[in-house]
Length: 377
Ligand SMILES: [Zn+2]
Image: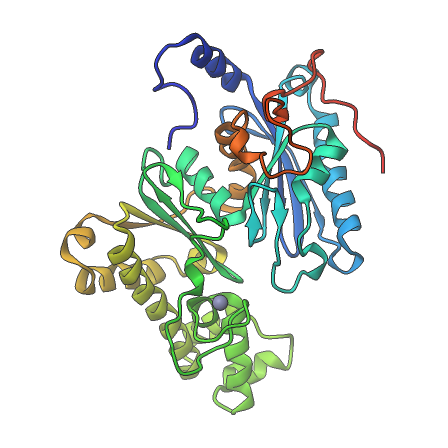
């Protein structure tokens, strides 16, 4: 993807924008179900002032906004003055689904506090900077495209396999969003039509429920309930079961664990075949802790299935590769998110306070270069 104007014609405006981007510093916010993280991202991808706090899920939206704003303010306050005056905007990676135009978190499963939450507007009001928001997997795809495994690639899929299984589709250098902003949810394709493991979204038989961490943990509990695994029985006596127990059970030779992990890998592999046929991607970039721990075992199963079962031409082209940016992917992606959207009124038209011709997305830092004074909570 092209995040800067380097390939544009040398018009004055483009040149001005180029020097603007070369200077631009973004405050990054990455909000997940257990943790909220923040940092400042420099134009070369350097992260400054990384910090984190638990997500106060039980305390409601206002408490969550307060933690987010507090972290961002702390990051900004600790920046050297020369860096701080270049802070132009906030980029937010949020659990999905989201409405990226209105800057809303819509209805994340299990997080009632953030249903229809105007997270971007809240951060704008509290920090005095324009804020742009998208789903965590979309922001991660931008990050991998900018500095990670998909550098220079204009047609790729990003998939993350951890507690859940999320995705993003990049086509011709652009995120595929759909009219509601929810396109690219690759984990919620149905692979088992008659029941199948429950999914985090409330459905059943979805890829996420079969292959991702929460689904594997549930399947492990079911296995213990039916007396199918001595290994998991012993683990369940010590602590709630996780996907890690299932993976370690497979390595230890437990048959039930081996079958669950093999089914998880095969389901992911079958889904990859479908994605390759449907999207013709050059790359499938695979991140997330579960896939990372499984390594080649996970990716190799997918490659073999694509090679044997997908359409010949796209199967010959696609490469299935590990993601490169690890835990920081949601922070790093804030920079290209802002670089693509700042100054483009499309991303603000649906905000309540937007008026045509006045785009706070293009204002950046205040005239004296400082981060505008923040509201105190
Ligand atoms: Zn689902």
